[in-house]
Image (cartoon, rainbow, N blue to C red; front, side, top):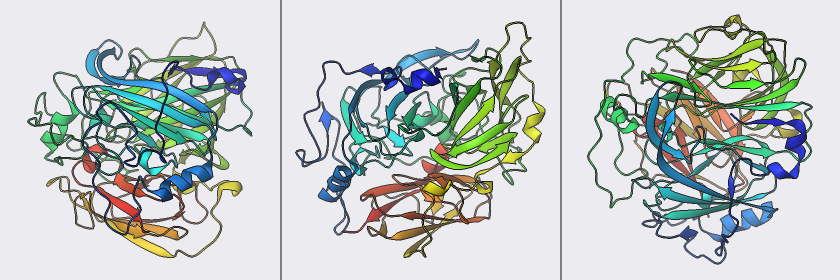
Length: 523
C-alpha cells in the first residue's frame, strides 16, 4: 500500500496523500448558517430523526460551540466517491463497493488542528453514510443515519466538515447496514506537528476479512443467513429490497480460540487480506537494513480478530487507537475489529512476512517486508514463530503520562450488559435491541464510567463514538475495547463533546442485529 519517508511526512505536500483535492468546489454552508445541519450537496435523503426533548441535538448550538472551541485550522478539501467496482485480490477478481479505484481506499492525511472538508458522492445503488472512526469530531458529522444525519441517497452527495483535534491512526467507513464488510474503508492519519517519534519510513497496514463477490456471496446474504438484520439502520425508508440470500453458506461452525475464550466469530470468510491482497500475491514494503519503520496497523475486518507478527523482528508498541502508550516490546499483537496499533521496528536484512493470523479461524493474511533483492520470499502459509511469542493486548499497556485522565471518581456509571446468542442471533444491550430513540443520558463535564458486562458466550469489540475512554488502572486511551465472554470491563471518559453518540459492537453482524445503543448529552 502507501509508504512514506520521514522527510515526506514532514513536508507540506502530503497533507491529503492520494486523495483528490476539490480544486473548484466550495462549501457554502456551516453549522451556524444551516439550521437543519444537513450540509447537503444534492438530495441527501430524509432528515435525521428528531432529537427527544431535553437532549442536545446533533445540529444544536452546543455542538457548534464545541467545534468553535476546537478552532478551525487550514482547510483540507477532499472529494470521495462511493462506487461499484472490481478488484483483483491476488488471482481472484471480485465485484464490490469501494471509495474509488483502490483497496483499501486512498488514505487521507491531515495535521492535528486542520479542518477536513470532504464531499462524499454516492454512486452506489443504495443509500450510505461516512463514519470517521475514533475522531472526537462535531456530532453532526459523525455519519450515523437517522441520528446525526439523513442517509445519503443513491446519486446524492454530502459535505462533511470538521476539525481533527488529536493526532493518531484513524480510519473511515460507512455506518449503513453491513456496507463496512465490502471494500468501503480507508485510513485517516492525523499527523502530530510536534511528532516525538524518530523513524525513517512509515508503513500503513490494513487488515480485512473478505466475502463480497466471492461465488455470489455478499455481506447482506451473510447477515440473512445468520438470522440477523435490523430493518432500517442505515437504509433510506424509501428503499425497498428483499434480503439477499445468494452464495454458499458462510456460517462458521466449530471454531475455537483460546485467546478469545470461545468462538472467534460467526463468519467463515474465503479470504483474509493485508492491504487488499491475499497471501498468494502479497503487497511488498521495501526498506533498507537498519531503517526505523513506523507501522500503523488497522483492523478493518467485519467479524475477525487478527494476531499479527513481523517475522524476525521485535515490535515496540507506541500507540493504540491513536493515543500514545508507554513503549512496550512485543512479538505479536491481538487486534479486535476497529482497533489500531502503531509499532516501531528496526528492519533486518532479508525478506520477512508480516503475518496476520485470523484468530481461531485457521487462516492467515500476509504482506512482505523486503530489504534485500536476493532473499527468497517466504511461503504464503508461513507462520513466524513470533505469533506464539510475547503477546500484547490492550489491557497490558499503560497510557502515556501526557494523555492519562486525571484521577477522579465517576459522576455517573452506565451499565451496559451484552445479551443474546449466536443460535438466536438476538444481540442486544440490556436486553433491548437497537432503537434510535433509546438514550443513556450524560451531562457535559461529567466523568462517566461505561461498565461493559458480557453475559454472552461470544466476545465483542465495543466502540464509543466521539470520545476516547481509558482502560482501568492507568490503561491506554482507546475508543474500542475487546470484551471477552462473561467478563466485565469498566472504562472511563470525560463528557466534553456534546451530542448523540453511538455505543456498539464493532462486529458488523452483531451491531446490525441489535447490539447498538445511543448515549445522549442532556441540555
